[in-house]
Length: 262
Image 1: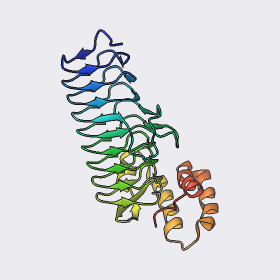
Image 2 (image 1 turned 180 degrees about the horizontal axis):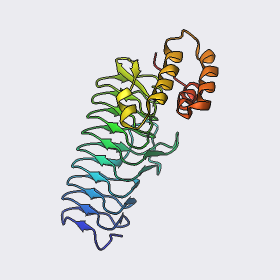
Image 3 (image 1 turned 60 degrees about the horizontal axis):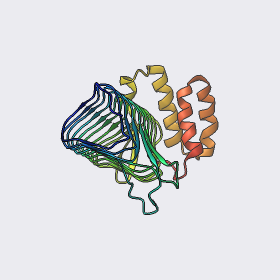
């Protein structure tokens, strides 16, 4: 179903069964398959491919040669009806790839709201991306990766499968991340190691000085105290009673499977 207010270029191919919302624009030579749903006011430019069971929210912008909802590259994938679900107001620049999930995991690749995916970024199967993130040019999010709210993964960086990048963390360019990056941490290198906190990001996003000082104290407990993670946790739990933002650091210590970067 194509809404009467949508603007579809005559050369675009939209299969019967696709749902195209109000005021959507679809550019030349774009291909959209039957099980795709596009929310209102979304702009889809030329030579875009959107396939599979893919749901895209409203006010997104999708630039030329982006491919969304294509089969994933997991060798175990057997053509199952897995999905891609995308929120609102995201920007997918040229040649970004977003692959559908696998039956072996959650069967969906999930992207939130207000994210920027720069040229040729690769979002692999079963990835979860939160809100307000920045994924740089040629960055790679391997399968099953989680990138939390307000995090940044800069150009040419690669996140190993099953790793997480915490909220407000920042991965510098050309980095290889093979373990979890806790919230707020600034990381760089191959393999990525911590270089303090993403203070610029914290200040830009409204963290006040007392809270930043508390996060700095928590960072020192984790990285400079010489204590084991089990020894650090009670201190962090006590701090979290005053500063709930510390709970994000406790969470990664309790849930990490690959360990945190050191």
